[in-house]
Image (cartoon, rainbow, N blue to C red):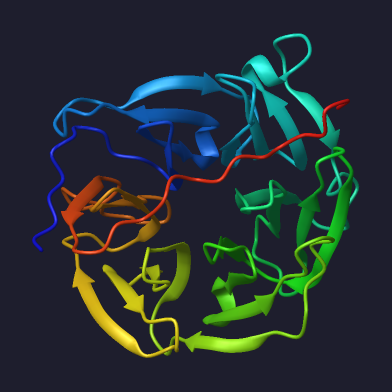
Length: 289
């Protein structure tokens, strides 16, 4: 299980990495880029879309080939063929007019076809962030408030559990999810971190949670009962996102904030693992949306 980083790319803030339609896609948040990772592990990343605002993460839109729903700028929008005119189609911009400067961060779709997206202050002001839920009819609801730097969420295979990191507070919580409404139940503390910050996450076929731990150069795996299972160590300091593409774990890194980036800071790593993951869930809009 030796991580390798063969691609030449070095990302400022590589996150939101997902297995979508047989390929791996990811974002470089602050540059607003959506990128694809070619099957050749040494090939450069390929640009798919470029926005003029930060791009936190995307999910595919069911029934719209090449279409995406995105956490971007101060809100949530449709991109590519999912957009009405080729430009971003905004569903909502809930962080417009906030008392501090805000942007969207990590996001994903759940197995029921809803889209979940977190927001944070650029200066990571405590409690300024929120978690939003986009229902199939395109309406955007505030699911949680009082977060600082939300990352994930990640969902169990049946969608009944949501894992959400509040990175600045060093905690991952697990929430029950109502299958019909998406309402969140009372959370439990799933994992805490005395060193580093939990960042991007993914759930594998055994229900275990993989967590990128920012600032430590490590990725941790936790079994579904919360027991720590293993730690992967990387030759770079800021792991930010993880995804399972079959039995290959892909890990994004970041250079942002580093005065002296090393040769592998900002790289995309891969490592073989013994338990596969599932492709990213799609946002499933209502038929008349």
